[in-house]
Length: 178
Image (tube, rainbow, N blue to C red; front, side, top):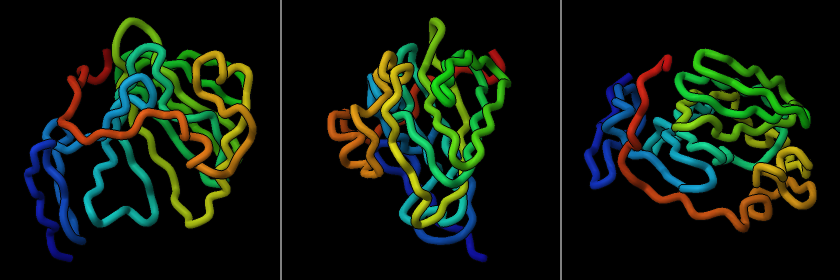
């Protein structure tokens, strides 16, 4: 297996082509959606990861990571620093540094930034062409701006009112474990 090229762009480093690579999160290109979605790094370039999604995310207090949803594949979340609120099956749980949330396939969930500063989270999950994602209307998630009005499998409907993602450099990354 050959090494992929790392290209430096105006917004940060991006892997190009297939192959293995090393990508530094602080120098990589991120995507930002202030107020909803936070800052996200997928570690991918033009060659997408076909089997596993792996993300590093930064959420500010009150900022939902996505819309409340469930899918047929499992997901996991590790809080590296800060605090967030996990809404799981309609219940709120506070997560802090080094807390891990496991969501088996079919678990309704969303994360929302909490506390008095940014929250740094690692998220991962299996990928399938039809993962059965359903965006679910939920009262608890709605109180945090993270719920659709009516259940839908269509991401275009679920995110119709969300701000667009904008490429940019890494946000200030808090040290892990604080």
